[in-house]
Length: 116
Length: 114
Image (cartoon, rainbow over all chains, first blue to last red; front, side, top):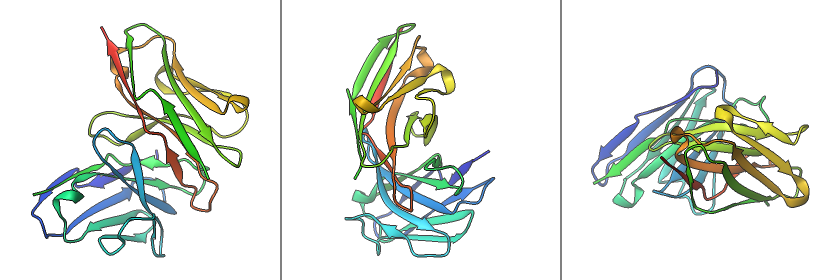
């Protein structure tokens, strides 16, 4: 139980294009989903928190117009990196809470984004 | 505000030796504490968690951790290291806000020597 998937697992795109990453909770309803960014050999940095049906809450320093987050259903959240640039290359990880497990988050396998 | 400090960004042990990964936390409210493991190019897998109750928590793969409030610590241990334990380990403390965010430590890379 409590499986979270991400798609795609890796993506390479040209500078200036937009990339959408999907995060799905496969066997539970995710009331809250989180998006993290991880640079090589570093910890996870929380980018934003999204609740189903409402606007995402972005962490300080994260450009909400660049990293568009949509949590349209209880099983799906998407992160769109708009007008991607090489500095956006990173490992993006989502996680989800089911609203019953206090504080526990279930993590997706991550998406490796490389912007050329 | 909450924070997590993991002492030692790299730890090396011999196969069969004791594994000890250190984690200290700061929290203004009773903490919820977690240890996650991450293998290369993968997401995070929960090893164990402390919420309330028994302070010695047992997790998967033979790992355990003890919550020590007086020391604000939640160190991760395993009696005998296995080669497959080589990975990155993250300690995290649960948030008290409505979103229940997690604050992660900087991580400890565990190397297991044959």
